[in-house]
Image 1 (cartoon, rainbow, N blue to C red):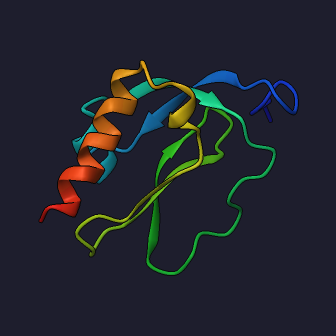
Image 2: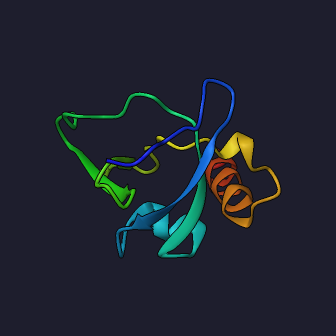
Length: 101
């Protein structure tokens, strides 16, 4: 296992691998990126109908999706901590675009 936060107030950075063909990959346009990780808990048992579509190097689920729904995407990392990131901009842009459909 690897750290997913440095301390209570300090995020750490680690890579996240994104599943090919996932909604997340379509939205952010990359297969791997660095995240601002800040969590001390993680999803252990995935809910019915959800699919893990991104993982940290230690196997922790970093994103889940409901594949038969227009836009249901949950992320474990903290995009709000990296507002300058292109991945963050694409994630929020994808969410806003889905709201208009």
